[in-house]
Length: 191
Image (cartoon, rainbow, N blue to C red; front, side, top):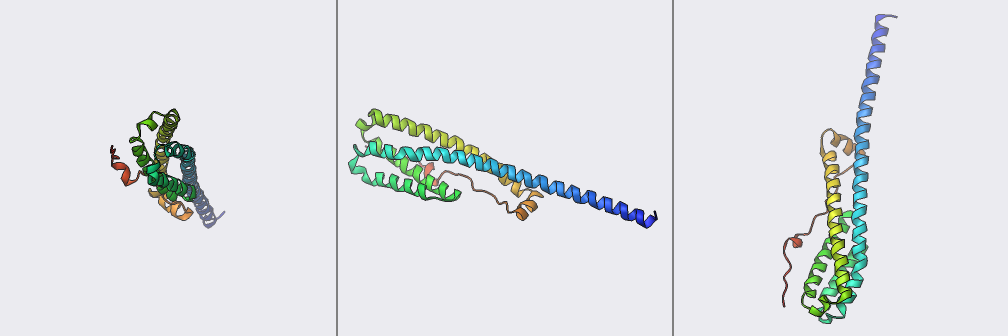
């Protein structure tokens, strides 16, 4: 074999090794994105399970309050409308926004409840209120888990050289499930 032929084989072998290494590197990054994306989707599914539980409890809660608080129809209508927006939300950002509106409406409903001592002592209402409180706690836990999955995913998407593979593969940063601005203010209880 001539020196030129040997150099060609060495060059070809080096090119194959470099291409295989590059392929393995990109494949590893891509598969990591897929894993993180699935983890984030799984976390969101758990959030949705708890949101659905709350969604299902609301009609019972509204009915329990309705008998005691007929003059508070505006708040009850607001809760019902917010629940309907949750049911109509299609994308994750729309669902986050609709559920934040629902959280605000529910907090206003619970403020109204404070004005009706008979309602607060009603066994059915107390049971529903406990279920709703438990569900809100579950939502908070699942929201935290979802946000952690989003953080890990977003960091991976934004880091270099991962960002090159992410851009080429269509992976984009995801939205966090953040509390609405109204959640920072404590509700006012008036008697």
